[in-house]
Image (cartoon, rainbow, N blue to C red; front, top):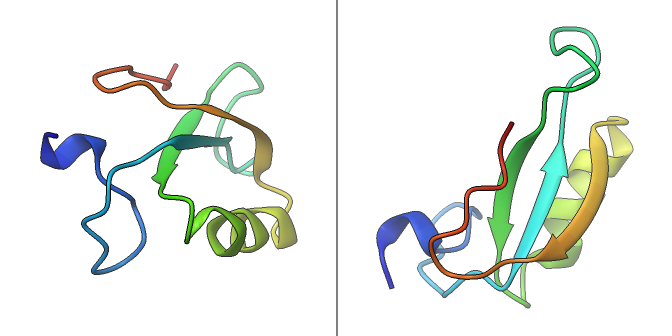
Length: 70
């Protein structure tokens, strides 16, 4: 596992299995998509954080080395 495939939660080094796709509508165009990666333990908390701000677009399965950003 490379560091880029680890969970995005602060201090977590677990392998990512989910990609949380998001954008900030105030600064990103509608086609822009960024990604946070999540292990099973942090998928809900990261999703809640993004969702509460209206940033979360969708959650997809992450495969090692995949780039989910646009």
